Amino acid sequence: KERFLPLSPDFVIELMSASDNIETARKKMQEYLDNGTRLGWLINRKTREVEIYRQGQAVEILTNPESLSGENILSQFVLELDSIW
Image (cartoon, rainbow, N blue to C red; front, top):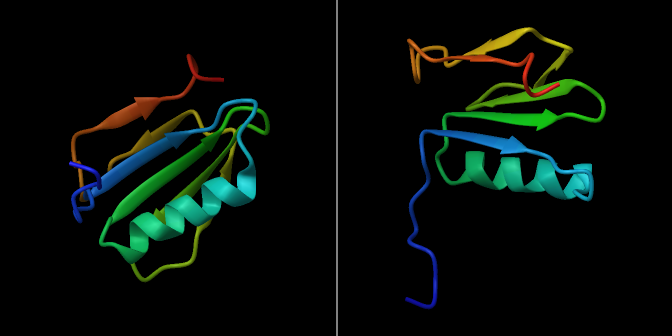
């Protein structure tokens, strides 16, 4: 009970707050991937950018997207970003 379980979700969303550091958030996303997460979104409201992390692929950066798809991990999930921006 003093540690987290050594499990990693298939999918994660990190929504940065105004006080978050981008490099720290990127390291956290990479740690998720290293531990088996298959898809991750790092959402930066300040810059209106989303960094998409996928296993075995380079990070994709989207500027001001209207929505995000859960792809083949959550095939019917779509996040509309208008309320987040």
